Length: 296
Image (tube, rainbow, N blue to C red; front, side, top):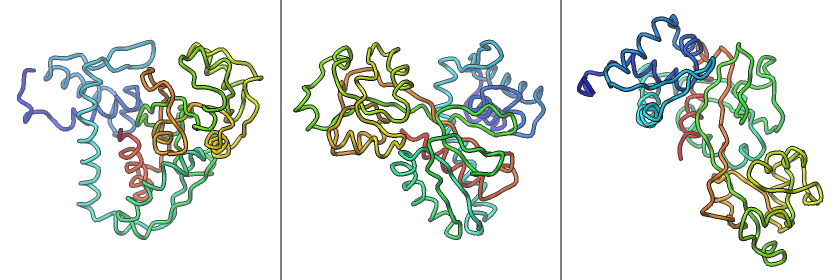
């Protein structure tokens, strides 16, 4: 590094954070209300200060280098703290009223969002929150919801989208199922076991195949379009299923299989409409969700 840490320009850090989270200079510039050349110069200045390459261009998108990933881990809390300081300085939190609608899968709505609401109730006691538990993609452009938590990035350019975390998942099963069917010793053993489908069994088969798990629809005797119903079937011993670790590890009725296996990883995207920049209530909820969903 060429400069001491106390000489880093916060604007350069902010430009790096926005670019890392948006995945492109143009999207980051829109988010920060800067021109793309200005933002590009700020990122380049940070790279020069550090003596490191933080991004590499892959096709039309930017990807973080290993140095960039390490820097993101340290600077993301700085951005979250800056947002909280700004809210406190302006006295916005306590004066926020109205309703914010959050849509998420039924699993995340039940197992993740209540913790967020506990924090939010202290920050904005006059704010109302409606949770839309839905496993389909709700249309934010039609205002069916204000903020969406999704595992697939929406493509509409009018929306603001932030990758806030990469969650992990493992396979889980109830002790009663393992006693009846036997405990699988390897991923290959799963081809003889019963699975619970969350939604389409065909789609689950396609997701399992790259993991080296060969199953057919015969392995899926039970399932549901509802993730909550499917998870209850797992808890009651009807079969096994992959589940986010933030849910599975907090469910005492099940056991995690293959604890040494490389976890299944999937993205957690936060999406909202452009009103994020003008609505205090949406900005507060969006930033709090980003902070809590990014926590390990």
